[in-house]
Image 1 (cartoon, helix red, strand yellow):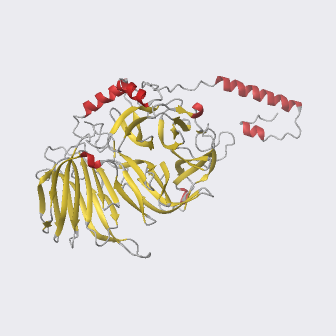
Image 2 (image 1 turned 180 degrees about the vertical axis):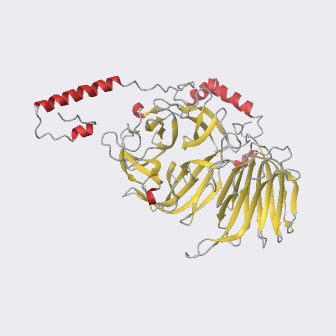
Image 3 (image 1 turned 180 degrees about the horizontal axis):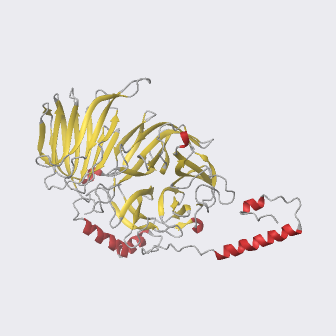
Length: 566
């Protein structure tokens, strides 16, 4: 007798044109063995979270009343009270009240409020959950209970939300299971129900590489997800890699799936075409695909080269994204102290609002992740982005200093004695004139033992020798190499980015200094951010220096910034 087939699919390939009674007996034996093996399989593991979970009413007033005495809310308030004494905790950047913070997830606008979800591993269950905060203005955030708890998935990994009619849909990766879908419709998005109670795009029994029935190579891989709607169908990307890149190297891939009911999904194809921009080894984790102006943007995170974007056109007939331009939000290694993963949502006005987490820059556990300020992305022309801080930042401004035009003699450091602090907003206009480089130094100690350096290089790079119109690009560097004297502080290569500044414009900087983070917006067209860990109590100063030739500080405004936690 021939050996029995090993899989159901192999069994299906057995020719049936001459089934002998003995063959039928063999089939019966195989079926019985299969049932026996299935019955002997261990039951699924129980991944129920140890974090307290609560059900809330659907009425907003009742929800708010229940939140006042909710044990998690009391725990969060106490956690923030204790963390307030940490000199590295920011005053106006969001951080978790009690847990390690990782990727932001599912940023969305629902019933008049902004909702931010993010990965956090609570102290009573060190697995990734979706934590939750809400804001009226994108700046002042209020903690809410955890939104998504693991089970049946082992952990809740990253994903996105889509605001549908009368509900919000979350799509995310459930570790060990596949991609999950969950729904909420209440005013504060406190109650979530998982569609089918299981993965809607499951992992395969043999892992990601092969279909568990046919053992044929899969055309897709399952990881972080995003979701949108077109016509009567929902679409989702699973951000991962394609191992069939040049020379067999892995390349960014976004696998497209489609569903009409959120429960059953079909694989469509690889979504991105024309990607000649990303590097071998880049993956497309944490994808967000949204319209921007008359084009579309795909924002994603690569585990090898961090947060990036592709601009292009969405072919809605072929369901393909044709990429024509590319840019970065991080300009160096993924760690330490860098802009990391995105979350993004349309602003309803043709732009996209995005926020990123920033990973720690201290060895050990003394420094935890935080969120950048939210940014509004809009189009400049067809292939460039405008990036500007968004939200009610002005509401945080306190004491104000203004400086009029000040000459910057060559090779002399000019200290600004009236401008000091480690929770500041600076608005500066600097005319480099013929100086090869102008420095703006922040968080400077008295004798510059510690200093964070912003260096401006005017017209230092040609955009392209081969494509008109040729533009000279300026270069901006944000350097934390001397930001801290602490042995456990981890510096990184300087963040260095090019930016087009029209000939008639000076450098226009908005610099946000918040204890352990510095963000620099340059002429509304570029942004650099880095973590810093000043150890000295006098690392509060500001100075400027023009290299080689004279430059001019046209104006500078500085505001002491209030805390969003008080």
